[in-house]
Length: 405
Image (cartoon, rainbow, N blue to C red; front, side, top):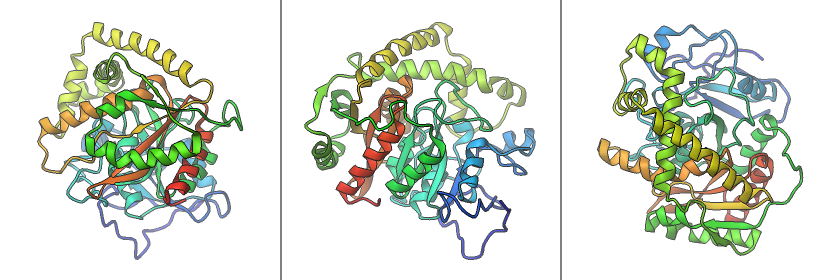
């Protein structure tokens, strides 16, 4: 594997990559990913390059990486061509994709709207056709939401399925790697490289379950746009069985997730924040302050709720059942949305993303529909350890919907 200089003709038209020289590295000459280019979110270490984590003070107070993250190394060894490191929300703590230091990437599918975060640059790079796939990370929705907003395929694998060694953390018991792709088949190819064998290799998925809460939570335009893709999915798995996944309400899921994850975020990054007093952009400072002052009793309640919800969700899906629902309740918010409007979208969204987050489930989102021309994702969710089967199902559904395979 050899380092290469920035190649002529490669233009970052959407501001997806970290400003400055791009970290490019050719992978092995042969392998399952040969001929495919990729990018990595700038929280993965790459030997000889800084990991900025989206914040100048982080870059200033941390050394250049001495080693490459194992997940990135695996992609290079499989033949992938690394085209650079992509922008992220500061310390991966946000869902819009805004970064006041590096610039907010343009959403190629809707330039007047946010790209989604925190893996904003990776989603934008794939959506703009700059790379075939890109690594992100997902704690509370940071792969799934940008994929939905930008109109790409994306996966949050089962928690713990892929190593996050050599990657900056936020909430370790929620953090997962994840990736975006322009084609369903490429999403699955990356899974073949990174994912372990399924716990039940070759086992068929089904039946299809339609959880009422995320569908009720979605805006009417979202539900209407996803009705036809959902009908096509039923053609593959049979008629959907309506169920309740969160009788407590999605707002309860969001609140417990928020409290448990905030406690972890402060435990993970609080010492650095307190010692460095870094400058943060809008919203990030407030989230870290809320994490610092999180009531331990509320965090403990969140952890306890998580145990019960996880047991319930895993039991429901243990036989191979698949959940399907809108990845995001709405299309990407406009760039001029106020902080209050952004926070409202965040709360509405994270009640849904918390379903897989709290239970450690695998989730694939497909660019299944558009509402007034703006992308919307449809999520397929399965039990932990069924990642490869879920990717295979997503590829079948993509073919049936006429999406890129």
